[in-house]
Amino acid sequence: DTAVSQTPKYLVTQMGNDKSIKCEQNLGHDTMYWYKQDSKKFLKIMFSYNNKELIINETVPNRFSPKSPDKAHLNLHINSLELGDSAVYFCASSQGAGFSYEQYFGPGTRLTVT
Amino acid sequence: KQEVTQIPAALSVPEGENLVLNCSFTDSAIYNLQWFRQDPGKGLTSLLLIQSSQREQTSGRLNASLDKSSGRSTLYIAASQPGDSATYLCAPRSGANNLFFGTGTRLTVIP
Image 1 (cartoon, rainbow over the protein chains, first blue to last red):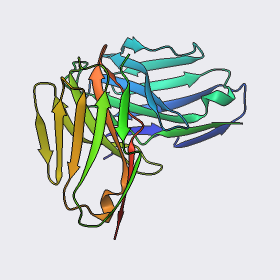
Image 2 (cartoon, one colour; image 1 turned 120 degrees about the vertical axis):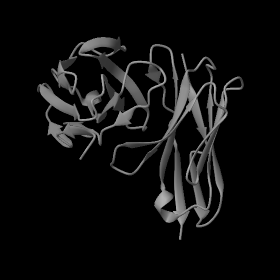
Image 3 (cartoon, rainbow over the protein chains, first blue to last red; image 1 turned 90 degrees about the horizontal axis):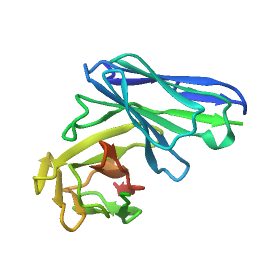
Image 4 (cartoon, rainbow over the protein chains, first blue to last red; image 1 turned 135 degrees about the vertical axis):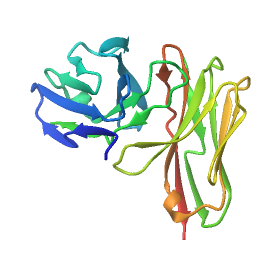
């Protein structure tokens, strides 16, 4: 009964490759997010989608492209992976895009680029 | 831009003690603030959401307070247990629906 799930949990790949991380939520939420947690454990928002539409796009290299096929899914595709992309990526969701809504997080995907 | 500081960075207490974790933020124009716990290698678990109009929010042994004007929030944990050992993160929400995270306080409760 996982509320927010991510696959894969671990991803090890070489520089220059293209990879995707998938996220699904079964909470019926309208809004989904991607966060990046770097080696210093600092979490920073990357993207936010509401009803499949992009509403937040922080300063992220355009090698990162989110895709939302439906409200329950928000996938993250990364082109031409670099060493600095190594981090833990968290997906989250909330009932709406409004400020009062609590965000629920997935377990994270640990990406290691070698 | 919002900056969030959590003090202390690490805390070790014997089981049964009450403790307070501190969070300060630079932009007081927040909508709410969320406290999370993160277990090693795991995701974030939401503990409490406190709206900007509220001063306190309680859940079980946890109590979060918010002083928006001074840019401070505290998380009080009563009668700590070894299972409380985790990293605690505070995240005020401001701007375009952004959660800004602090670097957390790593709590160890010693049996």
